[in-house]
Image 1 (cartoon, rainbow, N blue to C red):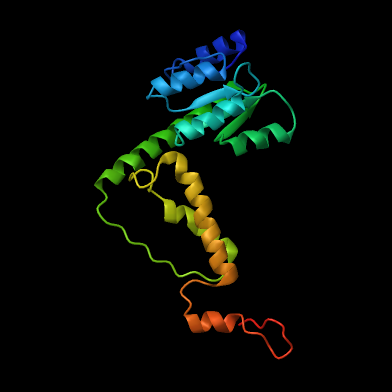
Image 2: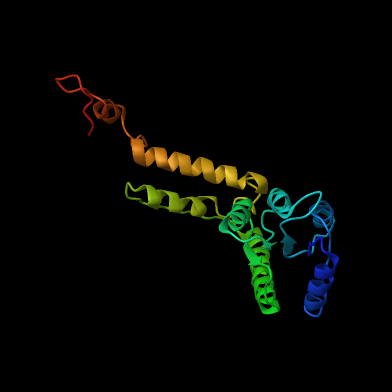
Length: 208
C-alpha cells in the first residue's frame, strides 16, 4: 500500500489489515525497494501523485521488474487522462478518490485472486513436456492480431524469453503477422511472388 498522506495510509491499512498482510510505503521509491525484497507481495495499491517517484513511474517499474504483479492506481484527480495513463502504464485497475471501502476491498480481492491464478498457472508449466498448436487464419488483420497472445503464451514461464522481453516479443509477432496479411509473402513460391508484382501492359503494377 503506497500513499504519501499519512492519515490516509493509516486509515487504509487499518481497513485492509484484518484480511491481508499489509506492507506500506509513503513514496514509490521506497515501495519499489520493498517489492524487490518482499517476494510474497500479491498486489500493489498506489496513489498516483507522490514525491520522489510517483505512482505511474512505480507501476512502470513494477511491470519491468515483476510483469505478473497486479497494480491498482488511486487518483483524486478528475478526468480520464490520468486513468488512461495509469492503464497504459500497466495498472490492472484504478480507484477514484474518494472511494468506498467496499470498492477497495472488492478491487484488492480480485487482484489477489488474479495473482494466485497466475502463480498456479506458472507452476503448472513445470510439468509441460510437449505442446503443438496449429492455426489456419483468414487474411484479416484483427484475427491475426488476436492470435498473438496464444503464440507467446507460457514462453516466459518456460524460460524461453525473459519476462521483461515478453511485450517486445508480442510487438514483433504482431508486426510479422500484419506483414503476412498485408503483403501475403509467407510460404509463397518464387513464381507466385514474381506474379504478384508483374506489371500490366500500361506499366502499372498488377497484383494477384
